[in-house]
Image (cartoon, rainbow, N blue to C red):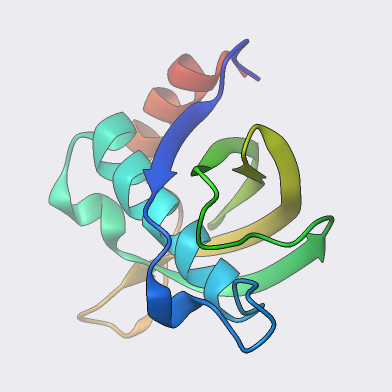
Length: 132
């Protein structure tokens, strides 16, 4: 893994917050998605880099996020399989870890409507970017 993971700033919106004043747990997956949507084109450099589907999502919550918190999501790749890319995340609020997460994306062929192998170019670019 790189010494400093790729990070994305997140604007907490009023409608992200529940009656307790905390960001609703379901919103965290949107924050992870926002990080992926910035990471993939940045690292892979192509619009086709978004041709993948979410196959697995796991989130551990460590502290609440409030409307006043400055939030960022750190994202990095932990594994590249035959057709999968595993991402790890830290959602940070006011400099503290608010959640940790993992997702698995499956490379997807939209014409055939099925998974496909991770393209060699993606693998090479991710490995170079992440120092894997």
